[in-house]
Length: 130
Image 1 (cartoon, helix red, strand yellow):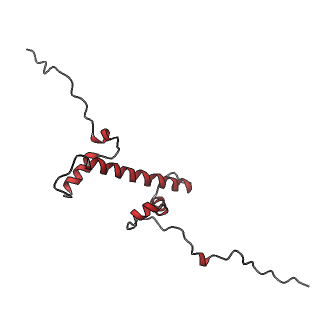
Image 2: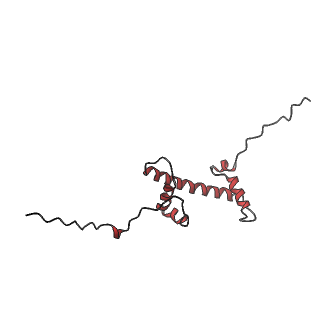
Image 3: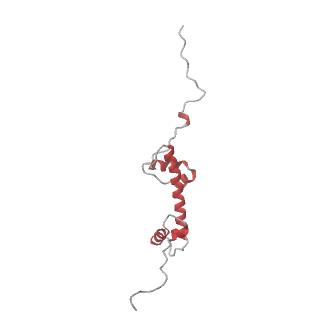
C-alpha cells in the first residue's frame, strides 16, 4: 500500500447559514452575540436567522431612503446628514429611532407658519407724485 490516502468523495464546500437563508448579514455572528450577551440561557436555531433578516431589512430601508436624500441633494456619497433626513422624514423610522441622535446629522428644516408672511397681504404702493 503506497501512501495514497483515503479514497472517497471530496468534502463538500461549507454553506453558511446566511447563504442558506439568502441573507447578507452574518447569521453565525448574530448567534454568537446572542449567546455571549446572556439574553437567555438557550438560543433557538431560528432566532439568529430571524434577527439577522430583520436587521438586514431595516438597514436596507434606511440606506434606500438615505440614497434618495443624497440624490435629491445632487450628491454621490451618503453622509450622516442624509441619514438624518431619511430617518426623520419617515414616520415609522422616526418613531423607532426617536431616542437616537445621529452625529453630524443636523436638524430638519422647519419654519413656523406664524413667522411666514401672510399671502393675502400686499405691500402698500408708494404714493404717486403729482
